[in-house]
Length: 192
Image (cartoon, rainbow, N blue to C red; front, side, top):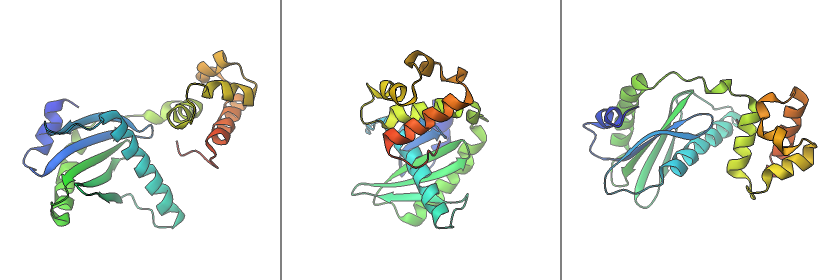
């Protein structure tokens, strides 16, 4: 989305301090806008916002309360942040000053989502092999990212050069890699 497109969507919403659009399920920054006096790390912020939506979705599913209309509200000492799924491919994080009334925030987020949704592209990010997404997830969250591929190789017996070309792996090797990723991160399952 062009900067002018996102800025035009924000248009008459003066309380907005920043907007981050995250591409899901990989939690990558798609687009962002922030006021000139703000200096947030866009890539990391977008990733964390996507992860928060994923965690919130899992928590609500465990409670039997998941809905496609859910949103996450975060209040800090100086920010009020609303995270909302636009569709299955995009999440928007909208940042307001903490003094902005919550009712006005909700109304403005609804207005902003209605403006942003039509100008987002149709993505098919799920077409990437699951093993590739698992390895990217591992590289993002591994406690020792510099040696993590060596650990995967040692746990699976698959040479590192084959792991680097994960799309070409057999189904058994891909499953072994996903198990290694879960073991290394201490997870029961991967939400990718």
